[in-house]
Image (cartoon, rainbow, N blue to C red; front, side, top):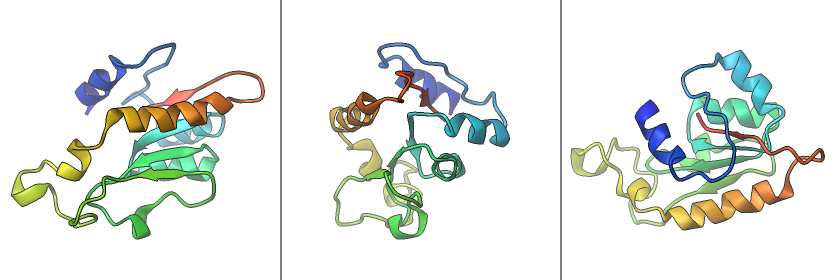
Length: 131
């Protein structure tokens, strides 16, 4: 997954710190408590960030949203509307690749990220945590 993170970060403008694979769960919680945004998929890291108070933007695909959404207010779940949404399968037709994730429009996701980051922290610091 580090390779995927690095591919995503090639498209990020501005300053960021990539801590993927380098911090403990306790450190993730501490960083999330001061973060302007947590962006990721439905994982334990997403739930830790939400519990620590970070606004969460989470991309969901085959996993059930009603069971795994980030608890609390101020979070956003992004899904691709498809007839098979939340199918629970590991990829379409046994491929390991989920169309509901692959067909999400990056520009729509980036627009939502920008909306959250534009609010910023009161001290003007923006922190983006990429799991």
